Image (cartoon, rainbow, N blue to C red; front, side, top):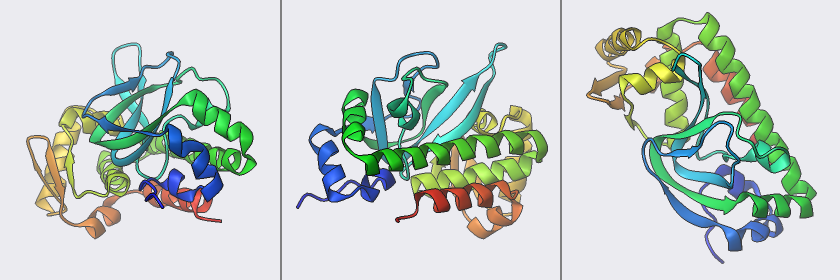
Length: 233
């Protein structure tokens, strides 16, 4: 039997549901900074990351880009579009490079129409992303930069499975809705504490426990919501 791809959504499917998708899945690279869809465009394909992280970004009128959620190896890009309007609500950009399985959105929608269990799983994944968006909004409004950056570094590690991350100061500022100079100061503080090593856009996480102690409660809250919604049933 063919080995199933290492993506949380695909792994959670029953054998029959997976077979509805398997013939239509195609491997695809996720290059760094690749734009998968722009806000307002029609999403044509769904993406199931195996490695790498996709950033969902809101672009503001004055040119600022703010991340509202991340999608990695635990979920997929295209959940809500499968169940309703395929118009993208935000821009999807590859934050951490990797690989994914891709399927035409119409194929995924057709498979979901055949399977109530797949529709239920898509709904739960959509709710998990929505929970992350809500928590991110509250976090960026209320918590200090150091806590927000620690939260995002932990979440990026969880989604990518990697301790080494390619993240510029601009990318980190976008992740937490802060100014670059604030990110630079906080990254230096985390490095002095030996929680991370940071050099020219390359981050190595040195101490996960230290980052967890520095992060706000939003990291644990989102993780708990994902565990509740996406754990095998």
